[in-house]
View (cartoon, one colour):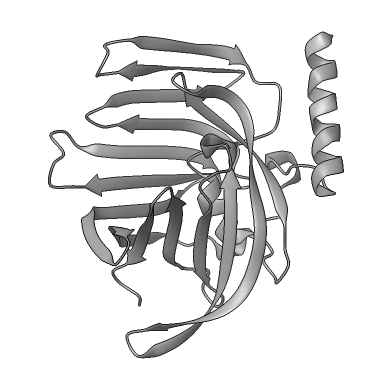
Length: 245
């Protein structure tokens, strides 16, 4: 009873703060016709003052398979001693999360979204393994899939939205938190001598305590992600698409 009251109070607070209820799979306003099978690579850069340093590349595969959508990212960096692979499976009709795993040299993490949310987080640096087993009481997106959702929402200038997401990290927090689309602006990008009209979408989330805003540059015609920028203390992370076709 107390838990339900707290949940209702939290949703009421969101409504007052943002003028609308946080969206989840049960009230998802996205347009599924934007979803296409994709394979693309982003160059990963860090900018500090006037210095640019390339960290590596991030390759993404988006595949529709039956009633499911499969999202896989591979991170390639010279210093990695083990493969870095993130995999997410969601329902195609509304992006309800089904599975999320992340494997790299620092930690292994697996989540199964069923009647209960179960999984584990293995911190390879400390050797600590944290088990996850809790009720699934709310409608939310997986924290790894919501950046894709942004591309498929009804974007327009001035658009704002609160997104309910689930994140699992025993070193910070675990459970349902929010991401917030703060602003959407219309811009023109020059890429390989071509002008492209894009939506510039500013997003923050509770994972970073809303202290590191991300900016997504999304092609208006195709909803292709062309670039992403992340503001961090003293520097800026940039992901730039390698293939703009």
